[in-house]
Image (cartoon, rainbow, N blue to C red; front, side, top):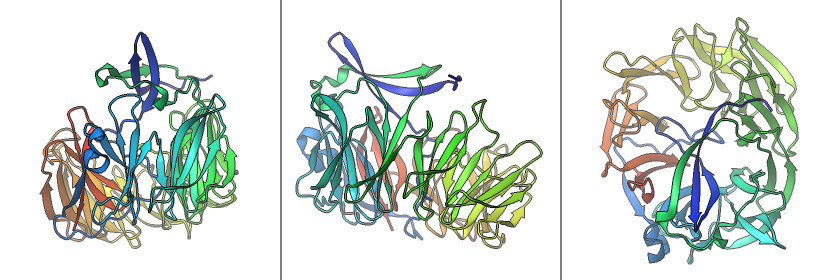
Length: 485
């Protein structure tokens, strides 16, 4: 087995009597990192003035006094519902699940779901699915519950008999992808005796040569019928989905390998695998009519265009894709893709398979805000720790506004007219004070500035919503507030 480098994982251990039980792995997103996204970033509601708090919830108000010390998190959201889940501090105590009206924050379900629901997701057609470990005839399986998001009642359930545990549920146009990890010695959390929170130890563990992982991905439709199941190459995970393109991809980010599949059949249409080491700048973009890849060997930049069946339909010499931050695979909903020649960055068209426009800002990164706006970010913070974000018309390349952004600020989202950044501009670290600022893309000027009511909060964009998550010193989410115009 090739050495895949060092990885860091936050491993949660439950100390029960004299035994140490490995309970699970928690992915931590730092202030600079962006969560993995399965589709293009949502556009927020227009915010010409600073938004105001629309509603606030915590675990006790939603689930009762038993959950007064629990953390509460948004696990899925769409235009019709915000799905929140409460996590108890103690091992062996159940989680709880409730759907909220996005406009009022009021519960949609008369009675919350209480149990050990694992990952949850909303499909693009508005259905909810959650996974849970169950024991059947002595063996541990993953049960997928397909839930009516209006009532919280199961419409149907399905068992996945593959060994291991579900790690991720991803909503797709007409259903869900469930990723299974071949973890050994799986424990059902609710079978454990409740433990004292003081006996739960959080430990950061560095693994020099982690064991290989075999994922199994199973596709269900919204009614709970299994469509197909497939096993990607070893160590591939984290499905990235393009509903419009009928494609999804999985990757091994430690090596730079990835495989692209048809969403309707689960059949692979393209694979980039290099057993000798990471391919140079290997990356891909999924789009509505297919996908684009690049492999930037020194002196030979080349973008290759494929249809949704993996048939090569063209190429663009002298250019490479601009990779997403911490991502090998990204998606776009239009036909614009960000490209770089080494001496210039610009926008190419997947339809014309040609560069639409470019600019000589060679040492800058390019970000697609939506199908009409592109921002080029300066990475030079030497002058007072301030960089610039210059906005261009995505179709023509005509320059629009230019905004001065401090090192302490992080891009958060876009409302169609204004870029939103969180953080204090003069800070020398991220995250920091939860200040929220908006900048107009046409003028570059600051439209408004909004301090958070607490220094322990963090701004978050989930689905189409702007949320403020307030954390305890132990980094447990104690409340969620939705902000809106």
